[in-house]
Image (cartoon, rainbow, N blue to C red; front, side, top):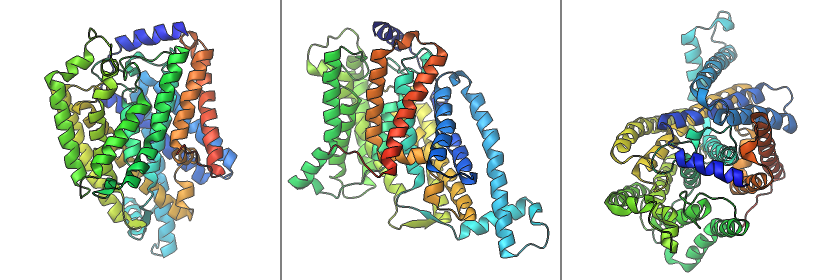
Length: 485
């Protein structure tokens, strides 16, 4: 245990991170492996639950674990390899769909297998012209949320092993790393499915009570974690959130204040205005003196505010991020149960324009204020938004492709598109995250992770993820949703 703490402290102290784009490159391959999982499930002759679970686990989790550990230095090569593998498969499957549609319509007078590019395009266009895509519970939102949970669960244990690269550790002051995106994307996973309360909603004490009940799991888990860590003398980096603060308390406080603010504005688009105002004021305060106060290694932690200054000072930034993503969620949501493929592509193009704007903005803000998870400054928020919106664009395109294939195969889209494990994690997201934290603590208290070799480290990570995924999949199959409120 002592060796683990010493190693973790030294690497965290020296961690300088990597580039914002490189971190994104570590996340994107998971979408491509999810697409490969879909294709395997779609063409599988043994569609049973057990075989599907094993297929998904091998394809999804082996790649996630390898990509963030032993293959992290070669992630660009891995990404290129996956692109070279998936793009031809996508084109071949689209061509087969066009051929099948052309044959069914009886519009071809030649060998259907020899459709040219224009014929394939016309066939796909004809298919999508009548295609309806579910809009109220989009599959791509499920994919993004579950992927955030998955990568976070892998990293919180992998970070304790030697195979986890030093540049992926949380940065001490400013910088970008894979571990730095965790709390930001977790806030996004909550905000993207949150509904804006009507203006004046919290004037009712009953509604206010419901809000406090809704955030109670985070507060209970946060306080409980702080007490357990203190009793067990378990390691927690003091510069992450503070001496007594932790991610659960940040998530609870963020949801509380953001939801209260959302209930004060009359229209959904006003969420963005409030978010910009909060982020602007927060950055102004950080630039004045607050950032220096938080980052100072000499200021003593002799009271609650000083001891937990990272967690407390970063809350306005996370509130601004939450409101921004809540606004993005309003762009995703739809009053109708389904939308046409044309409308779906229109939404995707809007997010593509947002993504194309956010990345240059991220570079500019980084040059002006730098990026810091520790204080959740403007640079950090813009970076997280750029990652999220880009993931939305890619996920929407994947969903459109999967929907076309399911339509051609006459299969139920909800069963064939989103992998079983991802649906299971999304169904019990908070419980999955809690279970991952508990198992991580158990591994660290029983194994000297800093002395574990590569092979055994990988085996431990695989078993750890297998337990996590198996538990939530069983709960999903028997339709048990674990809620603490």
